Length: 292
Image (cartoon, rainbow, N blue to C red; front, side, top):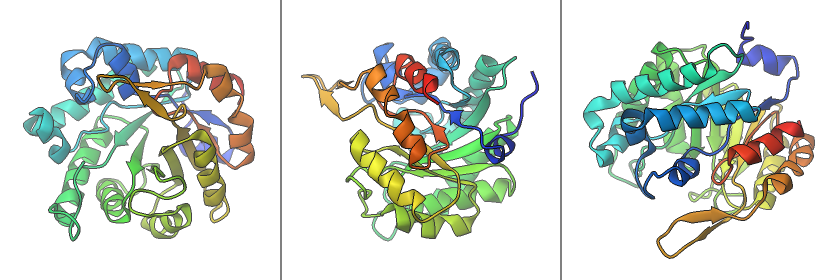
């Protein structure tokens, strides 16, 4: 099946379904809470590919590589800092294998480094940008269709990530998505309007909202973002707020049908790519896909 490119599909007005959660679904499959999902890219590739396949069967038009924590700095905590190329290459390969013989797009996922950047933290901006450049190069050179810089909260770090991607490829479709985990502000106080003003000039194609807090607050952030931009919007909210058990394992109470019922509101508010973040299972995604 011929694969129409991402931007062409958006320009034609298509509503695209992204995938659901990586971490919380892998935890249900046995990944220890707090462990890096990238470890399983190497040690349990069957589980990673199985999750990709489940999302595709649920109706995803686009899946993300399991490379959220694939920068050298973030991989240090898992003892994988010297395997950046291997982790990202294999993450792309698993997604491409799952999407083979379909028109499903594969997006290279790039998350934060997990450290505060200077001047507020110890990580120099230049080093962070180089980390992102290296990861983006590995993802792009191994065949992703687009890049998603996701779950950002700091304009400084998001800018470094976007510049890192654009240093590798000035043309690859690029999404930059922020997490508003203080309602309609990030932990650094960034509002949707602030994000749009700072990030659009850096050369992104799509602005996004993912993770965050409640579905209601994420919708408010979406409405605020649409009010200040006409760019396509990527929207992947959590399946509600998590509840933690005695050992710190999160659970999410929003049912698939309840989440799917909200999709018309998301589309009316201006989202064009919709999916789910933490707590969003393949069943949730199937309910979302039915409503597009």
